[in-house]
Image (cartoon, rainbow, N blue to C red; front, side, top):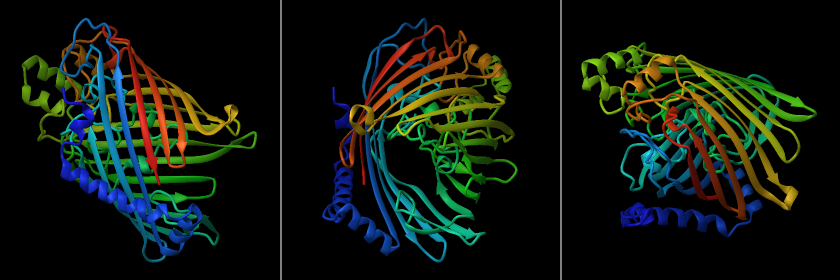
Length: 461
């Protein structure tokens, strides 16, 4: 059988293009010291960064009384591998303005093609598309800062951030293509599957069906009021035309999504922390689960394909509201704690992120200074996910969403325990080991538990 890595790189022309692009970038900067790089970028008005992440996973076999179209394979599964590579390019424009564009290569597949677990197992994979790597524009947006005070802060060059001065009190407007997670539901310890936890319900609040295409991006506008100790964010963006698909649409009053978040910085024992409260509302073509039950009874395959993300619906009226809490607190210089809780009404089908209607998780992050590996990081978290009564009834009757559905359901809360360890081998290269224990995958007592093992390589400049 052809190996997964071989399959990922069948397109040799694409491989050569990426190698050339990466080589030019690395050669340009490898001959300079970190200080020289910073000075060069600070004076140029440009920002250039690069990341490459490869993740490979396997899971154990497990007991399953039955399986359906969206079930995680109950036999041993090996070598599910993903790759992403991104160039982060930023350019200062006029006063307070910058433009950012991120060409990105992505490819590979998740375990069982990223179905079968509501808290899906690899945040770098998605459920549809050719596993061969494809280059696309992940982000392309304009950002304008408007000062509402006289004080400035100095900011360093970073990913999608050009170095320089920025008003301490400001209004920031971002418009174009981006990911909602670039602005909302951030968490220092649990937000990025390229360097932290892999599970979908740990990289973002699982109950927030945040508007995004298959790869996690949307287009629209975000406005932020930022003060030294608090911030308020408001946005209106496009939603998928088909559940969890690439094509997006924005139709006022019919297909759109609004999100509001209040962020407040706190301090406990002089250690920094942050609390965030998020509210969301989405209008889309999503049918209700009650409509799904009727479709099952009448064998309405057209509507069932809409619910499972395999066809475009022609009726608007889907509505979903949600509320999410997100908190983090540094306990010592080496230990941090974080938690999230979330709820949505669960009346209409999940349309963008993943099939979770209620969630809660807690976890810890530990730096390696205690064992003389100060650049290493370990993390552990526990997640519990649930779904609404209407959602349960639909799955019990044999319905399928776009990510879960076993053809039957003996309901229980889905539970995930995840542990990871990142070992920094070189200045820009990290290797990570990951383990996930999933009990009641896809909320089903009749399947599992399953043990998931992963290894991750991550390069960033």
